[in-house]
Length: 375
Figure 1 (tube, one colour):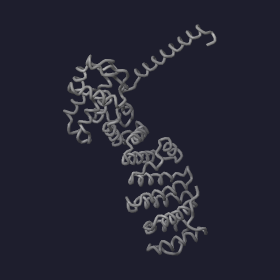
Figure 2 (tube, helix red, strand yellow):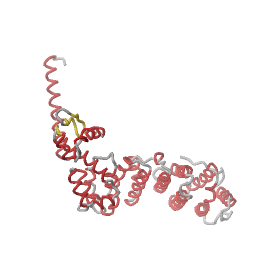
Figure 3 (cartoon, one colour):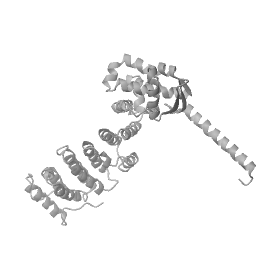
């Protein structure tokens, strides 16, 4: 993508025009170009360009596009430090003010660069930071497939890869995109190895807490397979996660009674935890039994007789379980329930079911052929 230039003149004259313009705005900068070459001129212009950011949007964009057009003709090794400096200016200048303008300027720079240029990473990080301050993350490409491609194209180091994914995660959280944020965090944690899993302790802890806190997240067994989460084995946070993955309500209540302060320190709501664990416990019961009596539900879910039907209705609304209430027999008849965990046993059950269906379809085909040879 080409970036509009400030004026159609030589690079040296363009730098002179920029110097004159910025100095006229009150910047402490010489009107004469330096003897060090264009990259030195640009370093001085970028350092003094703050004064331009106070003008109206169109004028600022015109000046910045001129700076960008000069940046893009520099050798790659001379670009990086200058682009980092410009991005820092645009991200930090009057934080919270004129975010749409700053996003536009960063976007112009981002799309004006070659797709495989490593320094695009710096610009993209700047875009993410500005977007997060104004709830505009929807306007930034954060699709995981695209982000993965950029990580490869830009040949990012492990540290930069983790920084990028963490920035995207935090921006999505700030912009109330919980589901997307959770996927990015799993991607981040999944990128750690046995050798560096201990470095992701804070991320793993944050991921678990967010999953537990989200009222619409129920299936979290995959977190236990992540190396940074496995590194937390033996700690209270891992014990709590295990309960939400496969434990029953009674196990959570016992944990809470012994670790109330810990639950509070995580910012989790005990009542919300109780509600989620009731549903998870019912899901586990529904996988094992196709009929569950009201009395059993009252005992296992610790609810009153008058609350059973309302609870079942709320459970069905989550689409984690499908069942009918038999008021006469005082029981719940289960038609389907989502498995809380999906391991070897569940894969075997799925294999058996598919094999059975295949055999049944073959039998039906054979019967049809017997009735009509041309079928």
